[in-house]
Length: 67
Image 1 (cartoon, one colour):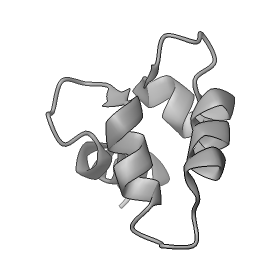
Image 2 (cartoon, rainbow, N blue to C red):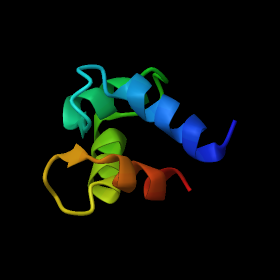
Image 3 (cartoon, rainbow, N blue to C red):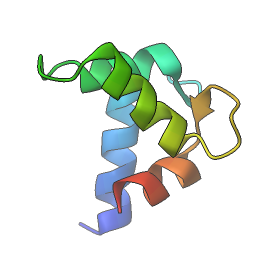
Image 4 (cartoon, rainbow, N blue to C red):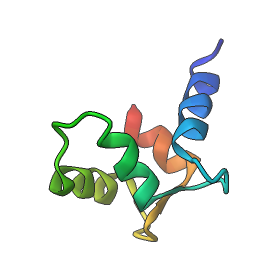
């Protein structure tokens, strides 16, 4: 399996409403499966990953974020 397929599978797991974007609340919920991730750290990660500041993460933005 290619790394792109693996990334897509992870993206789809986080995108719980399956609209093609990871919304801020979906991203926070995913990150906070680890109880050590604070609200502030989840917000900082979203701000970093969300290149165009539209409060959602596209697959392209996600791919850049995890690499």
